[in-house]
Length: 314
Image 1 (cartoon, rainbow, N blue to C red):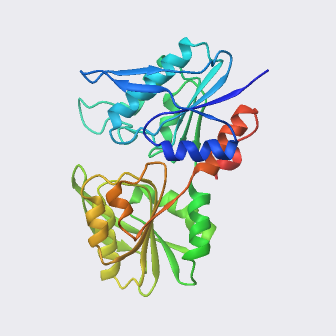
Image 2 (image 1 turned 60 degrees about the horizontal axis):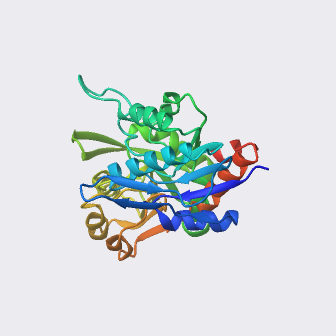
Image 3 (image 1 turned 90 degrees about the vertical axis):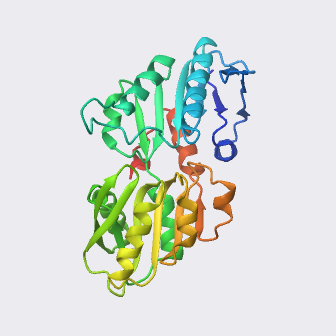
């Protein structure tokens, strides 16, 4: 008889617990500890022989520790004779290194794919990949689930107005924003962004009419919030009314929280719980966190039952 086992890493225990509650399946917390030299030790204190195991671990800060934990847990489960091992990565680390952007640089997203496959993962489930082509790096099934239903539901209930307009913070995000604009029946506009260095962006021109409009800037992640703040300033200079932001992954690397808190142009910043919000972030009232546990639990349940998950891709 087939059985499902949920294993939680240490990177996002709150999300793992919510998924466990949705599925009504007990959560296995493996014994994870570090030796004096920083090496990670793992022991799965439950029989998983012949089970379909789902390992829930966001590869978020500290990214390298989270990644090694995931690989070590997968290896432990493989050696414990699990029937299948699905890596559930609400946030996929190193996704921004998906191609050679300069000579003699790595394609680290492909390296992560190789490491997970060799470790023993038989399937990967993630949410809102930074670059969709990363799915092609895998020779095992890969599901890229979208958080848009959660964000759209919140926007419709709390922010929807007759003069709302969706904003792409750069040219690369137009397709994502077009999807939101279609679902919300709104117009879209774009920021012409120029990068001057890694994690450094200067917003230039607003392409589209935002004068007197309520704007929602939509992106897949917010890292240092430099792009976000510059975009908000540019929109306000072009006559925008209220300015909101929405992103799936709230990476919030320093000094993102400080920038958001001090940015008078931003009314509210909406993110999901694919990455846990820091204590500092919880003190900022304009940051709103939505839960993705329901969608991820559905993906896990349908995968276990060999049902279609295609409805979760839109």
